[in-house]
Image 1 (cartoon, helix red, strand yellow):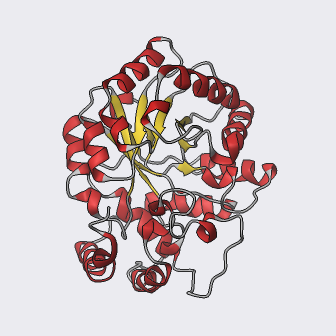
Image 2: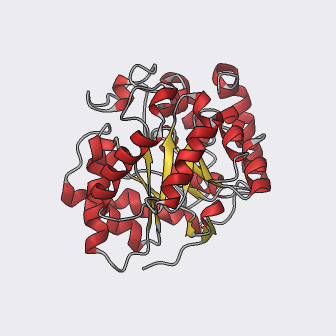
Amino acid sequence: MIVMEQRTLGRTGRDVSVVGQGTWQLGGDWGEVGESDAFDVLDAAVDSGVTFFDTADVYGDGRSEQLIGRYLKNRPDADVLAATKMGRRADQVPESYVLDNFRTWNDRSRANLGVDTLGLVQLHCPPSSVYSSDAVYDALDTLVDEQRIAAYAVSVETCAEALTAIARPGVASVQIILNPFRLKPLDEVLPAAVAAGVGVIARVPLASGLLSGKYTKDKVFGPDDHRTYNRHGEAFDQGETFSGIDYATGVAAAAEFAALAPEGATPAQTALRWIIQQPGVTSVIPGARSVEQARANAAAAALPPLPQSTLDAVRELYDRSIRPEVHDRW
């Protein structure tokens, strides 16, 4: 097993790999992935030094959690923190975020993952007012007291939501969309997290694959792929698909970004390396549907830091091509 840099995940006090493994694709919404293929991907990640899996109770209606639970049972040597999320199994209204529902969702996730205590549970992009509710945090503290969870965190859509959560003393980490096409969290969220000792998990790091540089404007995704059915936020928040960027705009900008990749690195690895070196980031969680992708993602951790000239070029590309379209909306 390869040794990878580990960073402390905020108030959990636990170290995790700087490149984690996102597992949305193991549940669905990216096309079908068989169980054997899923286990091969997780094996490749763990053997490449990954010690952090991110999942959710709605990924494949629990399939992603179940696969991870079976995998970790068969790999007792894998020192992995499996973080899950809850909240999207109910109507998205503040009234859904109550202790009774938390216990029900928690029971299901613990059964799926095959554990008595979940290492980390994140609220899964709830309505904005939930982040300000004393009752919600009291309920989460109760889950900790009952030893159902070891720590809790939040996954957010906006920087304002992240800042509200960071101010809460029990929040261990914040998961937020961050990539070279999504720079707004750099302004306030990352500095605030560092000051508060809160971890930052960077999701959608490749802008749903755009930053791989492999897509053309004529690319056709399958009907069961969210990159087909959620381009305009038809099923869930638009920002989760291509980082909320118009597809044609993203393809053009991705071609420019690909030209910034250093020798020996792919555009995807360059994007991951860019995220890893942002001050305050704990772990980045790219998905993978193949062994090769999982290994390549993990290898980004071993790349040397990008030079200032590349960082400046990323900012210039963002300001010119991306910011005018979506920055204020984020």
